[in-house]
Length: 139
Image 1 (tube, rainbow, N blue to C red):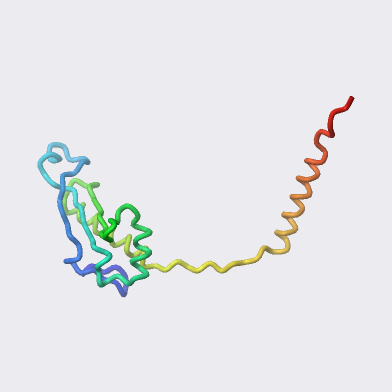
Image 2: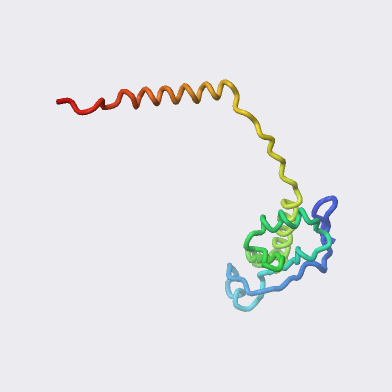
């Protein structure tokens, strides 16, 4: 189990890992060893994710989520397979953790009396500046 929050935990079999050739650093290793990791997580069919978390996850994941609801993350920052695997899993956990936090509702507020007064004073000053500009053609 991969713990995300107190209430959300992913089963290990929900994450599919594939190792691919890394485009990054690695010297002669880069053409021989598959160090990059591509993980796929089927968020749409995961029983661990509530509906509201899934909807926020879709918005947060953006292009990283396919039309079928599968999140695809590729990690190739490090030269070792194990470090790339840990990096990809950590990024997935962080993405889901961010989606699990409900945004705070905005409470509409009204402008204060002082801010209204400042706005009107600024308008009057601007109006006076424009009023004193070129009075027309003199003959």
